[in-house]
Picture 1 (cartoon, one colour):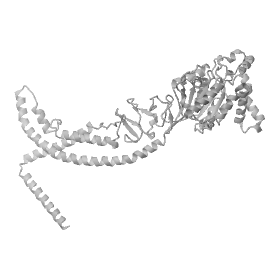
Picture 2 (cartoon, one colour):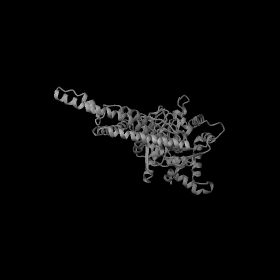
Picture 3 (cartoon, rainbow, N blue to C red):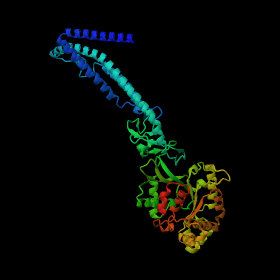
Picture 4 (cartoon, rainbow, N blue to C red):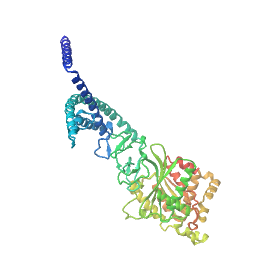
Length: 543
């Protein structure tokens, strides 16, 4: 302890002696030289600061690119350190560069020494001014080198410690924000390639680059910087879902980024009324929600919905695609992390019936429910009865696909895609829709008026109205020769319900606007049976 005290006293004495000698040396210098040295040192300090500021400005947009994507590392995730090294390097170069600054003796001397003029007078005056400027410039550069290196070292060390602290905080926050973000993900399905994913790819709205890894991490916990230089949201809490989204597998544009959807497959024979059903459903659903002010509804693809609306207004439908599954999205855009909606897949009969078709409907694997459209006019006896009572024109455009074939092939396709094991029933709800129930010969047997009357007069036989409807509709289908088809269906699916529906509301040949009834009920039943939250919306429409 005593030795340390002695050494400190010696150090203090040496510092005092050195300071005294420097003071004596400084006092011996003539006053005008002292003034020149002070001015040179002040100019040097100014240029030290200016060099640092210029390096900072030059590198303010210098961010470190992440190797495996089109994003940049965040400031605390790596770009701050990357920026610091560039600023430090550029500031050092400027520190020893006598040519760049106009507020510098060295800079003025450099420019004066490079003046080219034909006038001898100007050349002479410039040469007279050059000598003192060169002396002051050399003195300034010495001060720049000594004071600048020390100053930059101290500033760089402080900034390095700040970045280290910021990096530690960022490392602690990343897993928290990432966990919060993942908790908001909904399982998504691509309507084109049928791949399943949790996080889609997102498009930068400024440059159009597609980002496959836009989530909280080293590129940012709320906002991330695209390689184009703009910041974009990278988390649910910063409204990332508002960006255009794409399937990460096939790059197909999606209807929404994070949809909590009810996915329903609409299956039926050709001309069975699938397109008419979807057109009527979307119109009634959108209008009902608009009347109830249930928030903004988005539909996708918009062009296809415009065509559906044309069908609804004109009362005339067109055959849907015969070789491709088509997806219709009806979404409720909310302020939360996800959007709620319904996805209706229009599955062509050719896909169901053709064993050679190379692209099986893989979407069956993630269905929440299925609607099987049954055209009663596809049964010869029903057509004959209708023609006898109403005339031949009322049976135009009937489905010539066998309902039994549709159901058997659907069961096989579903079992194949969903991996259903033999003798194990599926709990996926299946709604069997009896289409064209507005035809009087059919309506007299399973129309809503008939069902309600039968339920009221036989309430003791049924637990509720739904059971009465199911019983009457099933009996009707059995009576027209479809009992085997229904038995096959009910042997595979434990939840099967039957609905009478009229999508158009009249004969198509009348070419009047749709007057549908019963189209919301099957979707509402599927939503309730699958316990999907969209039932809160559908049950308000059904009443």
